[in-house]
Length: 266
Image (cartoon, rainbow, N blue to C red; front, top):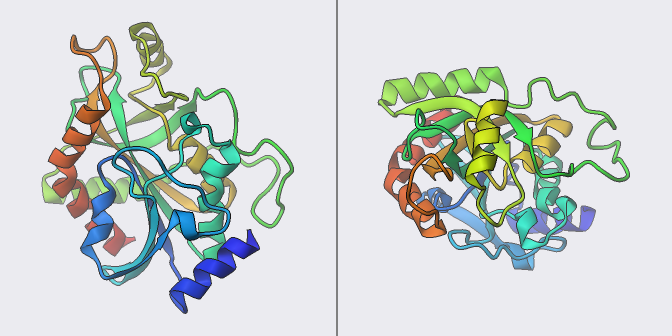
């Protein structure tokens, strides 16, 4: 990991990020709005290429509303065949670079008809349905404890701040529990019905591994889902990734406005 950190520091000089942002499907162009230092994943020792449509695959270092920020334009997914260690490696690198707060965004399916596509959902908790955990293996005591507490992964103070900002900006939002599955196939109607009964409000194929590791590393975590579609069985139409991108594009201006103000007030 030190090789990775040293390489990035060589590229960014004395820039020390305090906030990290993982930008999900269709949301990556938030990082294009600022004067920045861009470091492609495929040039960074220890990083891998991101292969999903809507993900540029690069780190963007920029000052946003007076805060020094590092943004991931695209993430790694377990369903791409990457190990959990690879999926969460950038979070550990962010920690080593000085990041204290991590904002994780994603595109997700609404599990019930009460949550509508086009809304933002502030994640209050999650259910890990991925069948594994990114902390399995030897523990790095320099990053965190062997058995981290998971009572408040998504910080209440950050959720309350996001609510206040959304209300002042007139942005429609929900709060709820995010369920993570491995993908890449979408969930069946029976699975979505089960998630609903378990207390899930949105379902997706990311975020939880990064949130677990960020919490383990002592970072404050804020999770935001862009609800891009209804999950299987909630509506009658079939699911496809283009719909995810299209809906994210439709609401991204509201998302950018909220995220920009949120960063300012952290």
